[in-house]
Image 1 (cartoon, rainbow, N blue to C red):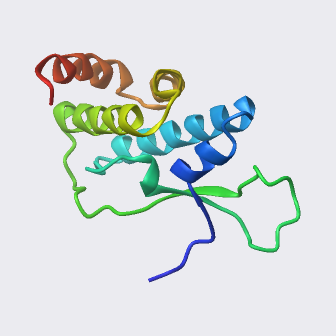
Image 2: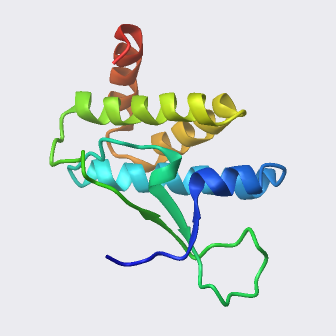
Length: 138
């Protein structure tokens, strides 16, 4: 198993909370990664900010908020489910994780969903289904 140097997105958000640009960029990158996963016909199953790592070389001298790439980890609950329902549940799990973990959850979620809408080919359908998932509580 590879060790990935960097902070989890959860730790990154807490550490750089006051750097609005850095946190916004992170949330956009998370949403883009989710869109790519979904558009490829996969779901993650456990989208939390603990399952994204902001990778950076340990010897990188750039600004502390800089990271080279976002790595998605722990696909243990994921699969090759490409139904709208499964993708919407993925987003719902992320929403619930943000709400339970981060103070600015609504703002973070708003950024992520806007970027998902821009990045995913099926975003309109998935986001519409997300409303139904929310209504029933999963």
